[in-house]
Image (cartoon, rainbow, N blue to C red; front, side):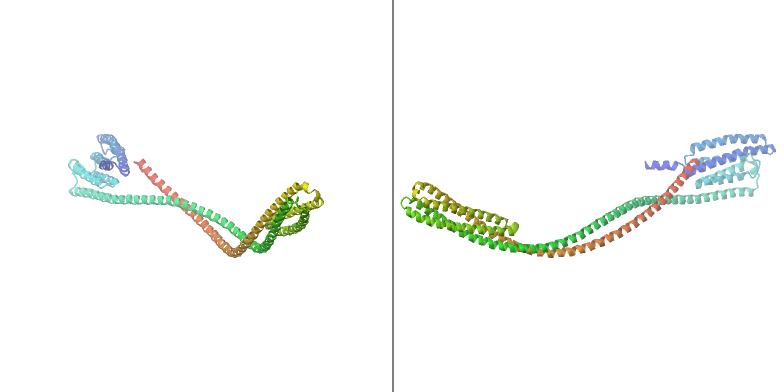
Amino acid sequence: MKSVLANNEEKQATAYERLASKLLLYTLAIILISCIPIYGAMYFFHLVDLYTWLYLIVCVCILVPAAFFIFKKTNHLSIGKYLLTPLSFIACTCVIWVLPSQASWSAFLIYITLSVVYLNMRVSIVATIYAVVLEVILLVFDPLVTALPVLDMIVLFAVTTMVGSAGVAICILGQKMMSNLHQQKEQIDNLLQEVERSAQELTQFGGQLQRNAEDTDRIGKELTTGFNEIAKGIDSQAGSIGEINTSMQNSETFIRNIGNTANDMTELAERTASLTRSGNEQVIRLREGVLEVGQTIDNTHAAMNTLRNYAQEISSVSQAIENIARQTNMLSFNAGIEASRAGEHGRGFAVIATEIRDLASEAQQSTVLITDILHRIHDQTEVVSGRIQQGKEAIDVIQLSAEQTESSFGDIMTEANTVSDRSVEIGSMLKELIEGIRHSVLETGTISAVTEQSSASIEQMTSSLQEQSTRVSRIANSIDELKQLIDILNHSLDQNNALVKSDEVVTEKAS
């Protein structure tokens, strides 16, 4: 398949061959047609006869259409030049055959020269052979040429051979020149294609580089803005760290005061626990006394006098309870005052002190009730027997109150111990907190130094980013200049391509 395509390409005439055939055709037609008025003038001056003139007209009318027919049929083929060239020599022979001149053979030299228009060595050799053959024919059959001297005949063939050889040499040189021109044209076309491809790649690269430069510039500006904001934040952070440092130092002093207060609260809780234990013991004795009163009431029927004695003892005990209740009330009042001084940390102890005060009030009321009962017992000893049951009920109430008082004192003592333990724990935690605050103050100082160093580094980075933004702007300007140069190069390439296409169109039209 490839060999067939190669043969078809070899059979097809080139644009230059078609143009050369066209030039040869029109030159031949003009020469033949111009012979008609020339021979007519010669007939007018009686240089040729009418027969010769008519013969020429007939030959021209036959040869010119034949030449156009052959050109039309074979112009696109490479073989066309080998058919049109002998036709020109045949036409030359027909014209000079009847020309009454011994120098008519020089016309062959003109047609040999015209065959050089193909710049084809084979065509020039064929044209030279045609010329020599036709000269031999003229030498044999034309009487005018036959009458030439031998020297003129030798000169005739020598000149024809020399002109043919010169034509062959010109064709060889022309072919080499055309080959070199084609090679140079291909090289130039390849170079222009490479330049055009490079220009396109440069255009793409320049566009990409410009976009990258724009993105880099935008990112640099964003980074500059971000670093400025970070610098502001770091400055604000440095101020806040200073305030935190001051606040921590103040907190250390405040916590030391709280620690001292916690120590006082611990001592107060211990004293409260001691007083609570004492009150609990008194309540226990009170309960035992109430039991004894119960036993006394049970034996009231047998010993009223003993009851009076017991009543006196109970009165004494009642006064003791009243004194204890009064002292407990005073202690709870003092504890409430100390709890209010302790503030938030003394709120729980204040509640306990309030409960103690309430219990003391109840105990005092109970002593009042006992005293009242004793007075009634003393006043109504005579009627005690009838009201023993009421006395027993009163004793039960007193016993219950004593048990409740004992339980309350137990709770108070437990809470007091708890407060004491918690106070100790608070003191320990406050010591650890003070140590932590001291460490935090040291760390805050270190953070402040690092923050100042970071602020200086960010300022340096911001300056570097601004310088980078300036350089990127310069790169963008250089890219714009490169883009303008690429546009100029593309414009030049477009002009060159337009010129090449114009030459090809002209060649096609000429062919």
